Length: 362
Image 1 (cartoon, rainbow, N blue to C red):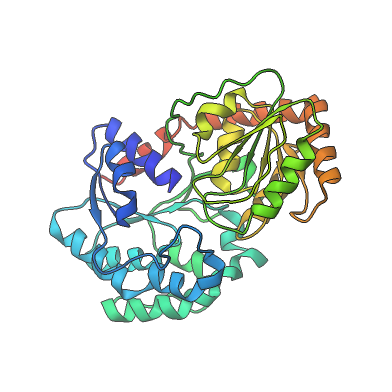
Image 2: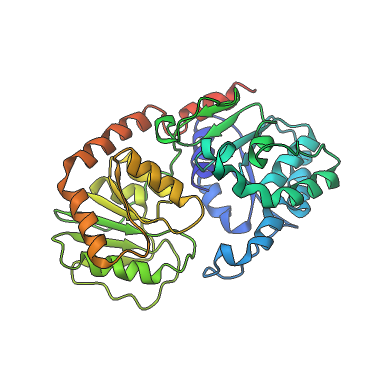
């Protein structure tokens, strides 16, 4: 959602008429970015409560992103008025099928690491949704995907352009990049002002905007930082987490804009979700990554490999977490490498390169 909202704002600022179709809960966010918003009518996200864990209901989520209801919603919207280009969340395969049916050029907006999604062992994680994807494509009477090779590689190969929303040096190396791949860097929301005014020594703790049963890990991190001479801000990302006991040097907030507080942060302790990692690196902030699920282990691996921070297990003890944070605070090389990555990210212009690529299709 973060690159989609950021790209929307960038397109609008360049004078483009943008309309967005998605879950009704996103209406305010995209209208604030300047888009016309259309809520899904047939398709609805499967969770009914913010505390639901996606991994507990993978079949329902597969039906949502790959099923015929979403495809029919998108097709109806594309046919409602002329559309030059459809930019589709890279994993929402039903949207690709609908754009193909409507005869509209479709661009994949990739908000996960690109290279491991199309090659290597990581690419097979999407294979279980292939059957649902092909059912939807048969429903719309568009060709099924080539049965050989990784499913996302096959889906994205049909696009004139694929926008990978990371700096290329951060992704896994590859010497077989498809000709339609474009690295456009992270596309981040504008910062939202907060009242947090930290002193010297600042650690930000943030473990996802979706429920991942993160309470125990959050408490361990807070316990680990209790004896470290830093001021700690723990943001919950809007996820209800009850029963936390913060130490005197820590405060807890339901939600604060990372873009606003990261420039005043020395270390981020994170689950290594890609949007959070990119926001940290855009501000030159090193990390301690504690990946829990989904693509987070891949992101954490790149952070550690590139010397942008350290990776620790989500089951690590408070002592191990404390030692990792202290090491990143003390070793200035982590900060220097993060600042170098920030310079690389800045050159992409926060959506400017992506807008140029899209304009090439008009």
